[in-house]
Length: 536
Image (cartoon, rainbow, N blue to C red; front, top):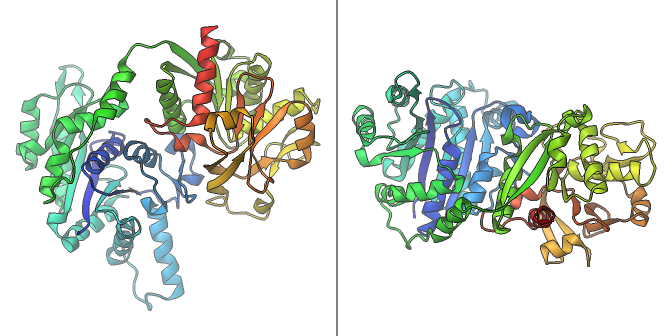
């Protein structure tokens, strides 16, 4: 079958929920029996998000093959329940780097390099890889940013060309736009949407669908107006108010008949009847009143919650499966150093210390780990969270006062966390860490083994530093259990405390593999222990 393409563009403002809408659409098509692939095209010139500040870009989402990607890929994986690869995300930076490398090698035989055709051809080549490498029947593409941004013009031009090459009957353009409400009159306005569609049409693209987003219910008359002024069929203007529950979005689209309408426009017949019952059950479960457990998330980037998007979702998945409501309290680790925010930590039933880079706020994370250890509060450390748990243990249980990670103190006498051997000669920052899926052997009769219920797992990593094996014996003598190791036994993957209800740290990022229907075992363990504590 000819590959079909759905192109998602954004209008009026960014962050209107284009990624979630694309992910939910992917689920509807998968439920109708089609093999779906997803791609995010990011217009910034960074080569990947790996070197970008979480304050600017939110979380860096890591895939099985080690690609550092945009957080929207987390939505795609969680909604559609697929495993993506590095062809699923590329940036303007990667496109230009490739074209410039070819020019340096002389591949263009001295020709003048231009945005059209050289940059647009490279974009089209990369778009083609998604279908080629996955064998997908339908490829969903999300173009980052907003129509009218100077950065995204080459992407839109490439997709306009692609539409003509693969045939208009094989492509749909879906424009996700925002309807603002004027505070003084309480009136919802369609004019910005009209302008963004006009901007799209000025470059030769007419949308087939318009997803109209707003915080409040959208009147049918507004949809009629958008259809009239934007030259789109009335039934293809889909009103989408902000959902109270994220996982309700596919159900809202299904109710509007979006899945069937898209297949009809692509000339496809559903291969099977969609079964949305698990999602209906999930949403009903979320809405049900439940006892609350409070989880303190002690992080460095808590001002922007998107920096911990997958952690937040993984906690919610685990809470749902445990029949409780997770109240996540965001605590800035630097505040704990100044003796602020402790009331939040002390009132929590569980503590999570997530990953991060750089020395700011590290002592606060160490203090949080000490509090959890001494007061027997359930604790889950993710990557850096496991490392600070080990540093704290060395300082306060093994009496190594200046114990630290050599990432934060190169002169420490006790580098219990140290640079990995294969990282020592690396000078480049981007894409050079231990990245992607690695196996982990679980040790018998440990909390980690009990949580997983299997002897070996594969988990996604993103780090340069690791536990220093020179200290392994001393730690074990005092009650630290290394419950997950690399198959050769050389790398510590999971550490836990023997005499503690649940104090577990993983060198990997378990949050990347949590799904709404199948929560991650380590998060399940934390929430279960927090629930026990809340009962007491």
